[in-house]
Amino acid sequence: MIEKIYVTYNQVHKLCQNSAERILNEFHPNLMIAIGGGGYVPARILRSFLKKPGSPNIPIQAIGLSLYESLGTDPVEEPGTKVTRTQWLDLSSLEMANLIGKNVLIVDEVDDTRTTLEYAVKELQKDVEEAQRRLGREDEKTAFTIFVLHNKDKTKKGTLPKSIIGDGKYLAAETVGDVWICYPWEATDIEEHDCLAHAQKKG
Image 1 (cartoon, one colour):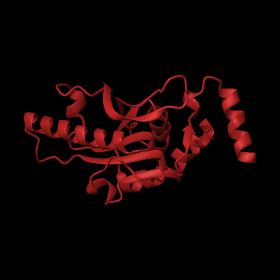
Image 2 (cartoon, rainbow, N blue to C red; image 1 turned 180 degrees about the vertical axis):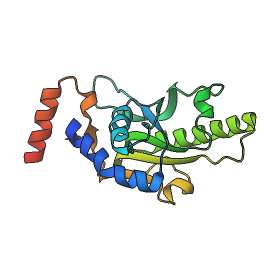
Image 3 (tube, rainbow, N blue to C red; image 1 turned 120 degrees about the horizontal axis):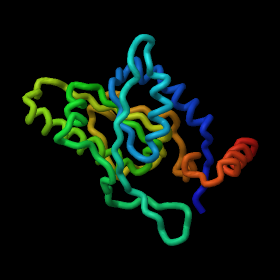
């Protein structure tokens, strides 16, 4: 049976807070892309800690990718093998042009098999390069970095470019074993979820 760990909103908040200084000092992001739905809440919390006095909030854009598939009636989902786009940036609009020349921080909740992150980075890089060619802005450098709340210490199916994983442009707030992480935004009963998290902490 898969071990489950329950994470509270307070814990997510603190993981973002504890990671913000390094992200600011080393990644210098001026745009965030949240991978939905798990990246939405961490990206929004993180934005509060990344705001510099006198500077505007860092914009957050969203993409939707689906990899996990529900198996029968089991509430625990198993990773799928195919990434499906459920929401993406419009290549012909300002959304994609806004990425050119930026330090883009990709935010997700968990790095499990790494398949979703690999897909996001590859496709975003490809689309940015296409937008650069179309707009004649090929001399502007776009840099991608990654932040996740949890990295599962396991063999990954996906790979990330050396420019990210090898150059310290990847940050996981916490590394855990190969466990099932129950996030608060997935809970249908938040009081029960918090009780389970509290009992787990005491145990």
